[in-house]
Length: 310
Image (cartoon, rainbow, N blue to C red):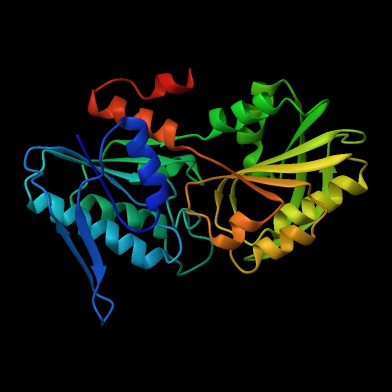
């Protein structure tokens, strides 16, 4: 087994390698002066089972091209199998036609990954589960739920919890979370008049006197979470925290969260955190390296990945 990382999230890749007690394969991944990407694998990988670790986070296009070119380099080096490990799958929110003459970019990216030479994909908390069907190669969609539930259980500082879905689309995820920690469920009735803008219309469920935990897969600008936190506090919630898998955190999201009534935002390290995020007093980061590392080990040994979540 060989592990190779591109440049999007080297910290997570290093943690995964440490968990597996396996050194990262030496590779040069650099950019020429005209922004073309160049990849050279500096070790023999012929006949090897190779895992390429790369989130397609910001800058999404550069990181995606790094992944595709690395896979192509490995395919031409005669590896036996290439698994694209994509902790955060960019373009996942473009999973359907939302209007006339618009693309389904999540499907296009899936095609590019397959065409580049990947034999399978390992990812985490896809924005929509059906994106697995966009791939014509085996795809494992991990969930960060065990990591989050373990964190809550370990800290044991939430009494009378109420798990809250920030929108109707996330109810299945929130219900599964609530079941794991033995909590009730509430739903935020949200409207999105345009991309990147959300309005809270109503809270479905009695949150008065409860400590609320918002659960979602992506936090981008932070507007949805901040607005939901205000609405929950107005309905009598005593505390509001949020557990999010992918901290995209764009467009001054950290400043917005720092000023919000939310008590804490907990994210996973599927996207490498910036210095601003690490310095935030309201932000805490959980590592998914052990979970991804165990999944990689099971794939390499042809063992069941789904049993991790039984």
